[in-house]
Length: 121
Image 1 (cartoon, rainbow, N blue to C red):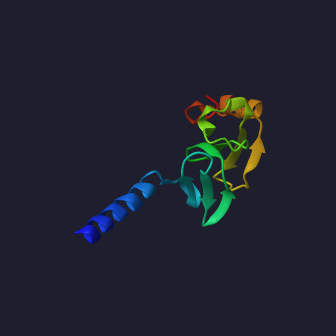
Image 2: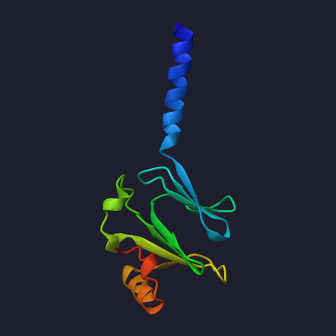
Image 3: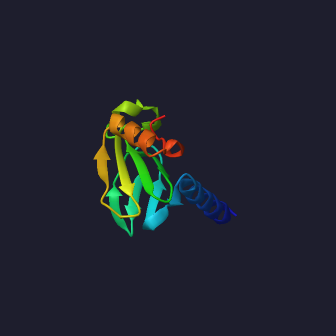
């Protein structure tokens, strides 16, 4: 009986540890891996693009926008949006991720009519 209880509790514990992790399939082979806190990552074809601190990712058919907290906070969603690093990926041309400032991203969002992808709010 003790052995059955131990096995059941171990399985529940292992299952609950994995419940907080999630993977979001993105266009062009990108994947957002959410492990909580500052452990969120962005990969493409099993290559690491952002190794930790990813806060948010939004996309459409043309662009992939990513925000990253570089302070290693355990609560990256509470960091002031102006202090985050931002990256934009042109999915049509498959250009390399390039960093842009908060102000520049807001300008691009307005210019390209990307309000549905606004990760600065």
